[in-house]
Length: 265
Length: 112
Image 1 (tube, each protein chain N blue to C red):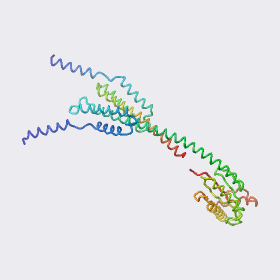
Image 2 (cartoon, chains in turn red, purple; image 1 turned 90 degrees about the vertical axis):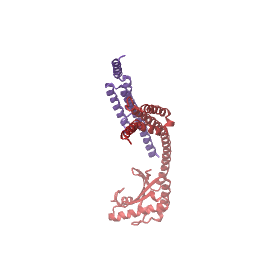
Image 3 (cartoon, rainbow over the protein chains, first blue to last red; image 1 turned 60 degrees about the horizontal axis):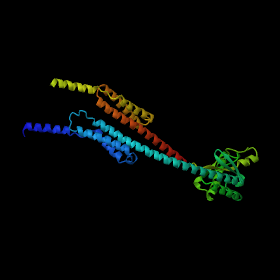
């Protein structure tokens, strides 16, 4: 082929390449964003916004078509038109999202009101139940309201023989009443704490108090209190409730406490 | 008409066009759009902050272009600025509404 002919061909090819240059990035992005938005929730929730974006995209497309073959690009604002079109599509989407969020918020507010009402009713029922139970427990043991919960104190000498941790048979009727009352307190957790007086070594006292607390715990579980709601602790001579200098005081200190607390949930 | 005269007329026409500044009302409208976005809370979340910054940048560029007589280009920058400002306001409102939804959902979860 003639060298001049090849040169002319290459020049023409280059020129053709220049004038058929594809759409600018802004227009490609605007088209993609518009497509996404127009096929999303905005189509139904914000048709006016989507229509506005469509008009803006149309202007950008027209500008691109008008200047497609204009090598000078003089007066070509396709990029700016496309930029605005993309923002309008994003605006339509954002406004639709606002509508969705407002609807969700309204639903949550309704659910919240219903939940508050249900909780108030539940609390009122539980309060009534607890009062009733407390009254029954007070007949068989001392009952106190403390920061740690409702504390039910059972005398050690009623439950156990001296130095023993096996429950006395004659204590079982009273304990049965305790179980009945505790079982009615649905949705509670129980801690059984064993205590001794200060006579004897700490180690022995702690072990004995633990074994006694465990005896009561196991009895309660056998009677149907769920095992995961009840735990046993041995506190030895800690936290005396009376003086250890008198026989009466020591008798009071030998005790088992059942602490009733609301479930964390 | 002689060629020289035609050229002179063409130059004068171009000069006249170039000297028409961007309408102050349009600039004011863009400034108002930015102010509205700020009032809507734009700038408090990353998305609206980005669009607000773009809106301000476009407006500044518009003023610059207007001074240099590039009116057509300056007007396009105003279009961009307004579009950015409107989006900044919308994303700010959207972000605040979503935060309220999250807060309400958390409260509901805690109460249930």
